[in-house]
Amino acid sequence: MHISDGILSGPVLAAGFGGAAVLATITMRRMDMEEIPKISVITAVFFVASLIHVPLGPSSVHLILNGLVGIVLGMRAFPAIMLGIILQAILFGHGGVSVIGVNTVMMGGGGLLAYGVWQLRHLFSFGHKEVIFGALAGGTGVLVSGLILSLALLTTGEEFAATAGLVLAAHVPIIIIETIVAGACAGFLMRVKPQILAGYRRQTPLAGASVGKAS
Amino acid sequence: MPLDIDRFAHLASPIQRWDPRFKTFSLGLFILGVALIKAIPLSGAALLVALLLVWMAGLPAHFVAGGVKWVLIFLLPFFLIMPLSYPGEPAFRIVGLPFAWEGLRLAVLIVLKAVAIVLTAYAIFGSSRFDVSMLALQRLKCPKIIVQMLLFTYRYVFVFLAEMRRMDTAMAARGFVKRADRRTLHVIGNFIGTLLIRSFERTERIYKAMLSKGYQGEFHSLVSFAADGTDWLKAAAALLVAAMLFGADALGVFRPAVLGWY
Image 1 (tube, one colour):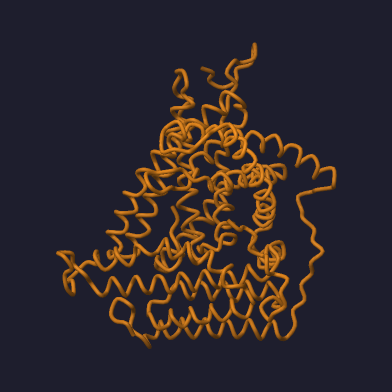
Image 2 (image 1 turned 180 degrees about the vertical axis):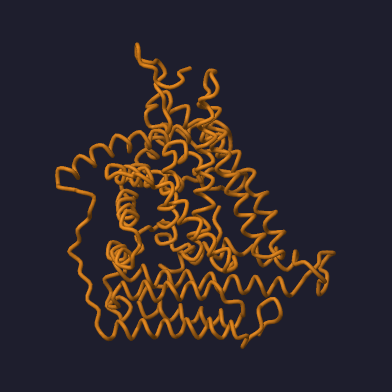
């Protein structure tokens, strides 16, 4: 879900750019040279994967995947999503140059909260918890984005109240789709290459060394 | 979906010849000015200016229409939602639903502005090579690390697009058909996981290859910018138009869309 140009008011646009700058500065702290190509390449993967269309009734929707970005990149999900938004505004020609800030806060904020939900899995120990928390994180990403988008519309003016409500309602099927996809993907990555997941801890601690809270 | 926005950057026109630093800066401000306009005639004027820019850059109509089409599809519901949901006293009722002219005017304003901005973005980024546009952004004090990551991501988008198409073909060959069910979503989740793992292993190799070529956290470019009088003149003209539109709107030459058509 994206907001396009021409709808939001000046203060909301400015708040978007300001919020994006602040969050980007925080989430990009202590980034070393080696991370630059890695984050960029993973961003490219997500960019491409978000072009996948999923059938939904008679029509189809494309994936958003901001929750999954949080699961894989952790805090760095925010700069990654920002790159995706900027490229989308420039590359697709779908518009969105004036709303780069708002869209970044909306999608990136969802990604960060999804990462928070994903990390909660360390507090539990049961089988397939990666699938459950991956799914929760995937749903959280889209839900938070939908809430921020509705808030941006409401702040712009009360004439957008109905639109904000419709936008939230339209998010429900997408939340369900993203929940299932993110859960499946997190489970798959856990089985095949768990190091790729953010906040991964070794399952069997080495003798004598305690590596986190292993389940 | 065509992702190469700079396909027509090689054409010779006053827009293509415009120094990308000046072009990005002045037209970027123009975009922000347009985003804040509240009167319909002024947003119409902004749309005409944007059309003029695209026409001057010689970008073919079908190329630009590809992007504008999506914006219109996205914004079309507004023509229905806004007039029917505008708070306050409706002008009349259609089959029991309140219809407010204010809402319709707001929808018209939104669409005019959105299309004007999209067209201007085409004029900026469709008239210079992508790497040159990015270098221009860097010269305009956009953080170096972000510009570098944008260049990287852009380069690998095409690699993974090809990779995804290959995997798609392989899945189709094995008889996979997308349906609206849980299993399809499960398969897509695994598909993305596979794509991620392949890329993850690739990033290691990419990084080592870059180190061996002397990468030290800096990109070097053979492109150098040189601005002359005409670049300044074009930038001044663009900023003047932006200031006139924004100023006329702020001074209330025309009424805001909520209050009237003009």
